[in-house]
Image (tube, rainbow, N blue to C red; front, side):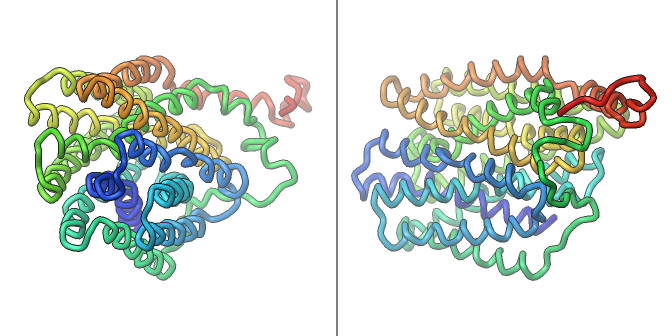
Length: 423
């Protein structure tokens, strides 16, 4: 578990390094705000491609521990061209390629994690992976800010690459597969059957699965905004140096981490006390999205810079539990043989929204300033909250899949009670 947290720290340091260095490379390369928004969005432009490719081809057959090692190697190497020859085309190319390499990182880490825990105990371990993401940002902000101030902005990319190589060596040396490994052998038609009797169509038309995707899209919209614009917003609003901005961001990430862990723990306690998964996971997700919308609205209307930064901290932090409760819900309802693939597909798909969030923010910022740029996030989150409340019914989904298993059982069909359904 500790190794997975450390890998997520590296993963999110890689994500946040562009935001931390933005002020410096915009000045050195003479970029506009729109060009920076393009760089920020490029990271997520093909983010889902590798995740989906891995999900459809190898996620259900190759041990996630091995996949994670391959991804770590790619993360590290893709930092180097920026160190050697920085330019707008190189930044665009490397951030796009890095996004592709990191697109499968979080779902693969979650798949490794879920091999070691039962359903009712997965909230907090999954939250710890999310904590690693926030810790990466929390530690990266002051550490990379010091590196930038003393050695230049390109050295921050070098530091991220070296950290990834160190983690790769450690991972290859000490990691192992868990007892709940969800990998099945090769078959001639991998997409035809899901768990033998529950089809792919059953899964992808289920409202709980769709609800998790909707909630994830809205939450990842906030991640796209945060990765691209949180550091520039804090620095511009408060007028701080890069190092002071790093410390403010660290405090912000600490608050976000506390929200993630406390809400995920509360949800897990609700489950152990007998609450339904709909209440403990689904409705909590909806309330988190609604709360984020409220704080975005506050950040957009209050005039005091410090209050705006505080409100934005809570707006970003409140979506974090979506990334622990949503995947836990997917593992709860998915047939074991398809759990890794379902997880990889959903988490890859939801990242698409992060492509558009930086672009919309950049356009609104350039046209109307920060208040409009912040308020532009509110409708997205409110729609996500309403749909999540209406659609997330994991118990109903489990019961439906159990009925399908019985109805489509060959033994039942042989007795003439029901026929075997075609997939």
